[in-house]
Length: 178
Image (cartoon, rainbow, N blue to C red; front, top):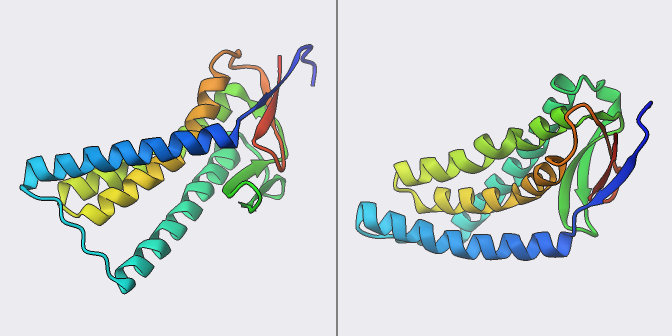
């Protein structure tokens, strides 16, 4: 790496989780009001099998979200498969996708935003279009899960697109080399 300036950027998981909780509460209310305005009611019936199915779908969708990041690292960032990792950081309570190889700021911004539509906006929009409140709620939760990606994108905006980003393997932080 020929860059001269090194900047370590971290994301506070406490602030991020508080923001996610507030977003979920606000969006639950807004989505309920939209369902009520369009369809006349917003009814949610919770059953044990329904709750189990909801949690299973949410778990799978979180995995798909991280897999989309990996595909982005691979095909946008050109990172070889053996330099990619993913999993769950149980201490932070967060799923992650990680690249061991530095990529450019431009590539990282693209990779950060990749899952936003398929695993956030799409379930929410489909839930509203189909008048299926559980899918709308899933979309709200998954969209709140994209807040970390949006925070990463926001922090990267101040750096030149050609700068390199090295992802930290275990912490919610990265280093930018300008």
